[in-house]
Image (tube, rainbow, N blue to C red; front, side, top):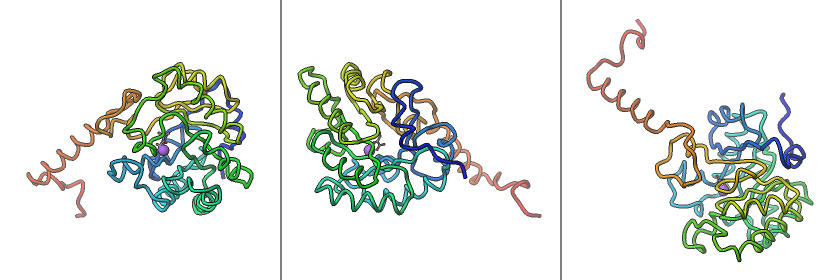
Length: 264
Ligand code: KIV
Ligand code: NA
């Protein structure tokens, strides 16, 4: 079997070449991403993207494990990282270890990701010391949406930058092997990237981050409204809609099924 991308390989990618990361939630999409990406993230964004939830708050450990298993089956090369969902790790390092060990054990993924800066550093240290690689996530942390009053770009006020930089430094010093930097002012993302020895993976951050990640459905044009930081590399939504409309018309006018689709 092909050996997957390892944690030390990603941790060593400070600077060029940039780390290519994308989310995936299903086996067939994971197979497409696997051919091109270094990291596949089974993000808790799946709650909104796949399950129609209003935020990531309702995502459960069982959902993450089920989609994580599908993504592992569909991929062979990329490192698969699985998000720890809201409520599964914040209570204590022990709770985080118990649940992260389930995610690792039941899926075979390479690492977990959790949101939070300095306040999560002791938990990250606890997990890494016990064999669970952790990708950190700072800046805009969607699981805090109810506290922040929505999805707010971070670091608009430069006075807040030192605290954000301190968060990134804290998770790096706690042993995280990389850190997602989401929804921050470009200058702040650059400060963070300069301040930490581990690779930063940006989303709505800066082209100078050590890698980039996007939500797959967003960049494929399968989502409705997307944030400013998304570039639509594809336009699959309208194309899928057109195919479905063609099918409905063909059924109604009895042009489908035709000879090619029939056993005679
Ligand atoms: O859940 C997710 O998809 C994420 C990425 C956007 C970083 O956390
Ligand atoms: Na997430």
